[in-house]
Length: 130
Image 1 (tube, rainbow, N blue to C red):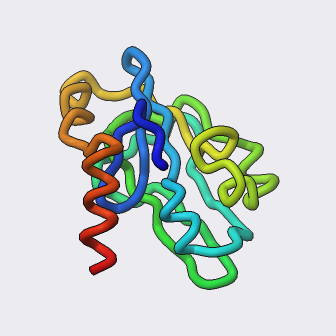
Image 2 (cartoon, rainbow, N blue to C red):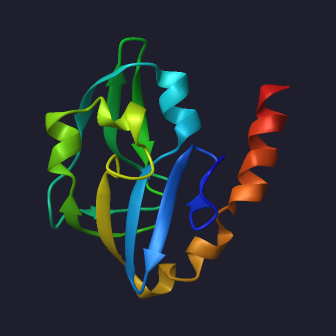
């Protein structure tokens, strides 16, 4: 079950908004599809990312997959633990496996509401499988 306090993008990233700071990661579905994650590439602090655009990659034993930004903003923190131990994405994608934290641009604070809630995301996954 996907956490209900998060918002989800169709590209399988999640965002958790606290004030104007969004924590971003990949969903459990994404990590399951990838298989064993062996490498993660993330940009550093100060980099601006745009909603719907790639900001990093996740490499698994199966494939390399781009990570897309669910919202726009400037990176204020990245998860060094994920870079050092990428397999944490497989074991804890919603907790210790978060990827970046961004300061969301004011005009994008409402855009996060356009993302799916957990229930809509579950329906989307069910439709995608058919």
